[in-house]
Length: 434
Image (cartoon, rainbow, N blue to C red; front, top):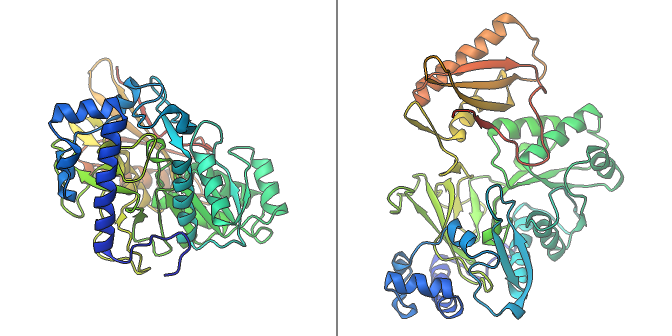
């Protein structure tokens, strides 16, 4: 394909050989360098010499976020402290932040991975990339920034928020690519339309990180911003696994190519921890192949997705997984039914009269003690409010939720733009039950 920063392997056989070599190195490196890993391996009765094939990965114990929290402030450290040149941390919504250490090689590998993402999005060194994600201890801004510089395009490191400055930079600097959360992408698209900037700006691509985006949201972003739908890209990533930049969906959008020459991805049933069949949804479990400071071995990410069968038309040897469909720990139980927000997402995305923003509110009525669910939605932009329209929207959503998820809900229809927008991840589920 001739993409810069692409893998040196030419086929699946070479990729598997590289993975086995990396797996053996990682297990040996972690066992000899980390007290935590050595204890885990010894308790599991496994030694580095026991890893002879890729299937032997199943002999290895799992690592979880609990290991990161218990090892604070420098968990899973497998190199002498003097080799650590940087730390990053997760946002830490509960408890202590998950802190990860990086060696110079880790930072270098991460930049190469991220440069590959820009390449798979068909960016060129002529592009001007407006980086509208958070800088600081988080991985987001630094990941997009280092990858952009390694790739060779111009970076515009503005950070999130400040829509006035964002719009000014779009106009004045000739920004062609914008990187942000999907929520920020919607916010900026609404500003572009409101300020009548289409035709005055050169924006042609958006790359979304950190947040799952629905089809309805992506369509709305495309309509408002003027960026073609096939030029909207998803980039996964988490602090534990370097940060964002560990994969990207190419222009064919047949799934997210993940960089299997840097980590092994297993998809396991979150209950049984056994592999799921191809095409079946499972929890992403990752094992790094080159990471020095804080290698991951069978790390349970809690993210849910599925492997995509067949080959991508782009010809890449890199395998693909679907967009992140949710998390095994963001599932909520409503009237004995396990529900993921992505279930609601999918239903609303197929109702043309509904906008892309929504909220799910769970509460319990004191008198009956029963759980209730209300779904707040917006009318699609441009629709005139009416009793009949709102009734149609309510009945359609209630019917589809009952049909597909097997629970009843109430629906509230609001004006377009009335639900909150955010430059960061948008909170959609509000569980007010005791």
